[in-house]
Amino acid sequence: MFTRAAKYMRKVISYPSNFLSALSMVAMVFIMATVVVSVTARFVFDSPVRGAWDLVTVCFSVMVWGPMAMAALKGSHTALTFVLDKFPRLPRSIMQLIISLGTSGILGIVTWRLVAYGIGRFELFPCG
Image 1: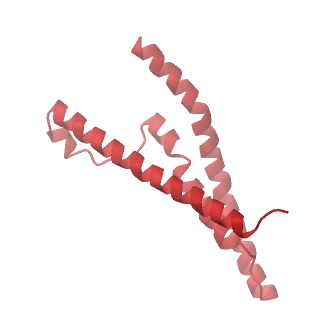
Image 2: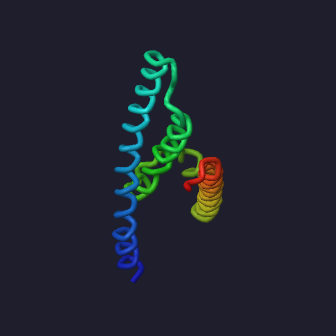
C-alpha cells in the first residue's frame, strides 16, 4: 500500500523537480551572460546594465534551490552521517526529523524573503 503511494508520489514530484533542475541550468547561463554583458557595457559605454544585480540575485537563488528536489529524489545530497549512524534507530530518526524540519524552515524563510524581495522590486517599477 505505502510502496505504491510512494512510487506515485515520486512520479508526481519528478516532473516539477526535473523542470526546476533545467531552470537552474538556464539561470546559470543567464547569470554568466548578464555579468559578461554588464561588465562589457561598463567598460565600453561606461554604463552597466541597469538591474543586473537584481537579476543575478534572483537567478542565484533559483540556481541554488532549484535542483534540491532532484537531489532529494535521487538521494545524492551530501550528508555527514558518521555521527548519526552511531545512534540507535529511534534517536537517529528523531534527529533526522529535527534536521529535516530545520532545513524546511530555512528553505521557507529563504522563499519568503525572496518573494518579499521580488514584490519590493515590482513596486519600485510599476507597470502602467
